Image 1 (tube, protein in one colour):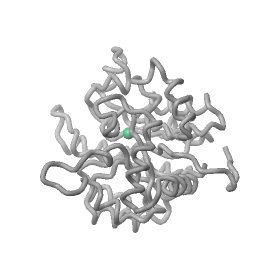
Image 2 (cartoon, rainbow, N blue to C red):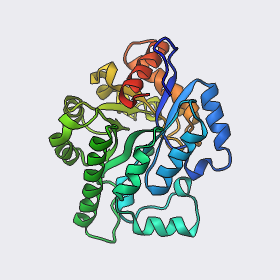
Image 3 (cartoon, protein in one colour):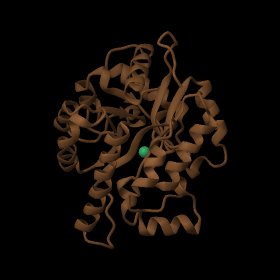
Image 4 (cartoon, helix red, strand yellow):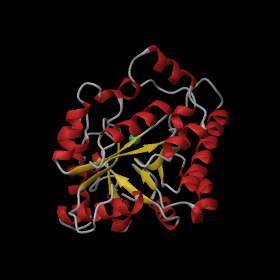
Length: 295
Ligand SMILES: [Zn+2]
């Protein structure tokens, strides 16, 4: 997977989920469309099955620029909403979402060591999607235990964290801070924190990936998009592009299934916000991705 510096840059979808069930019918065509559009991708796992599938998919496309991230999403540490586009509609996966998963270090460590794996996650804290079955403290503890184990795994295998965080930035930062000097520089995906949270995470070495939401028009009564201010403060060498497919399609495809080929829309908007040309932004993001993921 080594590419010489002389080779031209590619688009990078740094956070996507083509291994999910929502792509079961046409997965290879979706990947082919992305590769034809010069898009390289990191398929991100959310629990055991989707992590293993992310690695298997990368192995099907050797040297094509299809990589994997493996980990346990915070919402899957307890009972979670059953999303058929993620896991499929079968009884087995319904049973999974009703119980959740405890982080199995041996299982994930084996996947993490696979050369196709470029990051650990998505992992982190999500204080938005609690269920009503158990006290909040119990669910918080499960999330924190799983995240702590994945921080340790990132240090152990020297692959960066791919972080998901909602409504929990203070506690996320408190967990990361003591480890920041030993962690490979990681990524916060679909960042929704404040500019101050972003500054702290930048100080801790993190980069940020943004997707289709950047292309949505400003909300009623606003003159700029929700993420414009924060993107302006992030240095260009800390920015990446993503789709989070099958979710959050860019404005041009709003309400439809998203796919990696659409990452060009996020790149174009990032370029505008940073007063660069789309080609310059594409090249910058590719350099950033190479550095962070070691690809
Ligand atoms: Zn995701």
